[in-house]
Length: 422
Image 1 (spheres, one colour):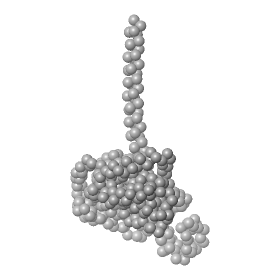
Image 2 (cartoon, rainbow, N blue to C red; image 1 turned 180 degrees about the vertical axis):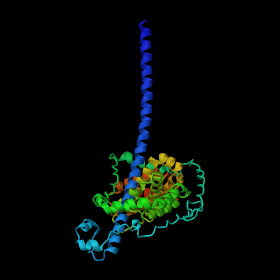
Image 3 (cartoon, rainbow, N blue to C red; image 1 turned 135 degrees about the vertical axis):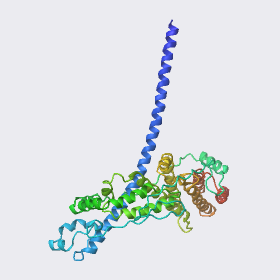
Image 4 (cartoon, rainbow, N blue to C red; image 1 turned 90 degrees about the vertical axis):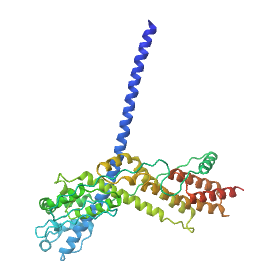
């Protein structure tokens, strides 16, 4: 009897345990999804902040140039002394009429929008006739997805695993009791806040009147841009970059883009922000890839300084790619829904090219250390050799292997290390 009671109690506990485990699994999955969503939102916020700062700069330049062109009797003002406008004499105020927003004044003719640029890849763009009566053409079907990579190798160059790199790294790290302290690069300094300037502009009644005028008079212009954004479909992300540049140029004619567009509920804000995010991310990655490809080691530069420069570039490269890979799945899904090119985010696209570009940094790093080990004045051969092998291992794992030139540089480093031990 007691045995049956024990068995029933054990079965009950087992069921409770299974239910608890299932609940834990579901909570872990939900937590992972929330983390991915948080990372995506952080990156989007960062890109929108950068874009917002650019928009503020454009707005300020437009205001200042308008003041300089129409207030010739007023003294020159610096951007940081905008508040002094209210301190001018009444005569100066009369001679300088409010022309900060030329597009919104009744005397100026309506601005005719320019059609967006045609894509370089030869695919259908979203351009239409501005003054014609033709209906907008149907958007081109989404391009078929490319085959997913079946191998860890990226790019067209021959990259293969080199077991000697891993073996040498492990043998050296076993002998060295100290752990590698790798520091992450510090973030870029925060952009100076311009909230005071923007707040002052928004509090001015003429500024608010100009916004109201844009909302009332630029409705057809906003409808035209809305159709262009909604029907924009491209195969190449470089065409998206050109389209976003055109779109920003058109929207810069408004007094304040955000303040005006919030009065138009049909404006496709989600797709416009996604297009800007893709263009900004692609532009930053291409700029970083170009910087890595242009890197040249200076033999006259001190060893420590040269190695730090290479490591700083590698840190930026890994951090940029890691940020994209961490949220790649959700971003690709979002871009597919909005018909935005996403293939460049795969390992067979731009990300793969950037990983291959790190091999150049590895070659320069290993060559510099090998030359230093071969020099007679080198007094810390063991630490220098370990440092070179650690960096070689790091790039080897990041890029998925070495190409022929990187293998040659590694063999030179290995030989120089063996010669220094004799």
